[in-house]
Length: 323
Ligand SMILES: NC(=O)c1ccc[n+]([C@@H]2O[C@H](COP(=O)([O-])OP(=O)(O)OC[C@H]3O[C@@H](n4cnc5c(N)ncnc54)[C@H](O)[C@@H]3O)[C@@H](O)[C@H]2O)c1
Image (cartoon, rainbow, N blue to C red; front, top):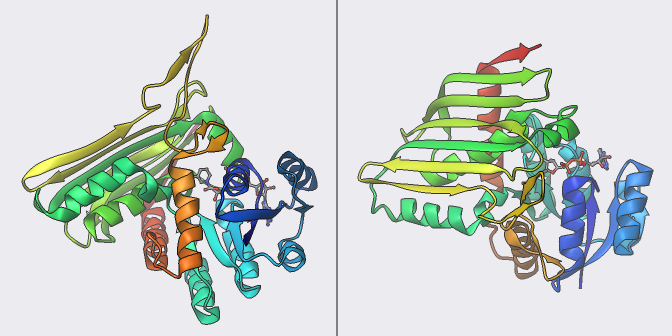
């Protein structure tokens, strides 16, 4: 049975750990977090050993696979430790927050013959796959303009704002999606803005073109209250038609006396005690492709292209702050 460790046991790492723990395709061997209390709590929750050092966890468990869910800017050291130990790696998005780091991780994996996939989860939402298949079939003609509007909760921003921003944390989803759909990478940036505010609301907006000639406009950030589920809206305007995918909570809302809460049915819902949704599809695709030696649905080059495009957008950005 494939042995998996999860490095970074915060919000996303805990979800990955539970997904592996519940999977019939692999065994969760350990969790790792540099914060001893976080590691211990995650290990105790799933009944597996907890470590604070990745190298030690890899050596003592003999892991075949590492899932890296550390903050955006520190994926490289954990990924490189796993690759050096010969473990296949699923790295959370973005692969890295610099082009140099992204290229170095992919180069090391290639040199050591280790499988590496980045968790661009948008490729595992059936609704986006339907959009992609429609666009790629060519029946609507070539894409002319792609617009995305992707919003998460302010509390998410509070959790990650010390280590990342809406460009690297959120727009990387939109960028990879635009590139997957159009088959191009960001060529020109006509305008880009990172907006932060003392209230905790932050956003990233950008407009430009990709190498296939299509224009894009993306708007993303953390602006919503916790009671609201995320809001994603995608439109691909083509020469002979348009295809769109929109989602929020997929229609499930719990109404209390004074409040309402939108419940997740798409990303990582717990269904009959197991994590399902796009996250299970992503993790089990990765485990199956590693076991079978078949190609990943997110090629390493696509993840590097997304980082390269995000870096271009970052360079072109105006940064504004509302006190
Ligand atoms: N695919 C998605 O939709 C999605 C959603 C949320 C987060 N993410 C990604 O998951 C990653 C983690 O995000 P999060 O929201 O879980 O953040 P988080 O802050 O909740 O968790 C990060 C954890 O990593 C630990 N950590 C930091 N440096 C470490 C190191 N060097 N070694 C081991 N542990 C270390 C921290 O102590 C923390 O517990 C990010 O890259 C983020 O972009 C992806």
